Image 1 (tube, rainbow, N blue to C red):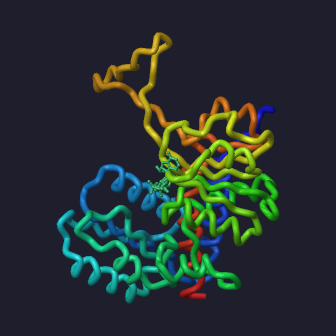
Image 2: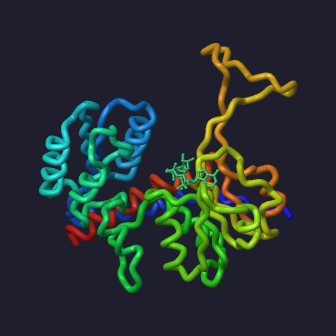
Image 3: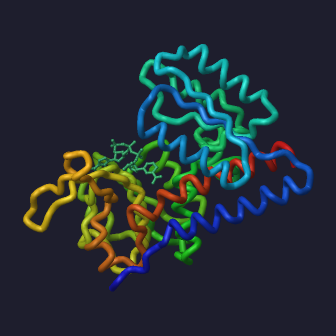
Length: 303
Ligand code: NDP
C-alpha cells in the first residue's frame, strides 16, 4: 500500500485564506483588527523564530500583533503584571506566552492568569479542564492537537469508533490530542516512556498521532495496514552522503542537518493509508490554528 500524503502546507493555507477573508469582512463592517499579544522571555533562538513566524502570520492575515520581549531574568511579579495589563487591554484579543519559560518562572501560575477569553493557545487550566470534561466545551483548543484533528477530518478519516493511539502525554501535544480524540468518539490509548511493548499497542491502531520527539522511532512493521499516521515530531538528524559520512555545509563548515518526524516515513508510507510528511505536515497547521483561535477570540469579545 502506498499512503495518501496529507499536505499540511496546502490545508494550512486554506485555513489561513479563510481567516484572512473573515478578518477583512470584519474590518469592512467597521470592527477593529483582531490583535495578538506575543510574550517572549529570554533569547532562545528557536522561541524567537516561532514568535517571529506568528507575528508574520498576523500581518499576512490582517491582524495586529503586539510584541513584548522580556529579559531572561524577568521576575515572576513583572511577568504577571504584564499579563494582567494584556488581559485588560481591549486591543489585545489573544495572549500567547511562548513556552518554555526559564526555570525560575512558575509557568502554571502564568498560564492560569491569562483570561480564558484570550487564551488562544488553549493552555489555561480552565480551557484544558473543559476539554477533559464530558458535556463541556473549551473556548480554545491547543493549536497543534487541534491541527492534527483538523487534518484527519479534512482528508476524511473516520474518527468516530476508531482505535486511536497517541504517542506522548505532554500538556501541549499528547494529552490534549488524546482528549480531543475522545471528544470525537475514538477509543484512545496513550503511550509513554513506561509503556510495555509499544509495537504491539500500535498495531491495533486505526489512527496514530506521534508526539514523542524521538527521530524515526516508529517503524513500518509497527503499523496496521491502512492506518492514518499524524507525525507531530520535529527532530534534527545529520544528513549523510551515500558512503555514510556526514554532509558538511560549504557555508558554515558544520555538518548539515535534516528534519525528520517520530515515524520512519519511508517505511510507514508503504503501510499506512494516510501519512503526514515532516516538514510540511502538522507544523504549518499549528500557526494556522493559532490564527483561527485569535479570530475566534475577537469574535467572542467583540461579537
Ligand atoms: P515532550 O518531551 O514534552 O513529551 C514527550 C512525550 O513522549 C512524553 O510523554 C514522553 O513520555 C514520551 N516519550 C519520550 N520518549 C519515549 C519513548 N522512547 N517511548 C515512548 N514514549 C516516549 O514533547 P512535546 O510533546 O513537547 O513534543 C513532542 C514532539 O513534537 C517533539 O519532536 C516536538 O518538537 C514536536 N512538536 C511539534 C510541534 C509542531 O508544531 N509540529 C509543536 C509542538 C511539538 P513520559 O511522559 O513518560 O516522559
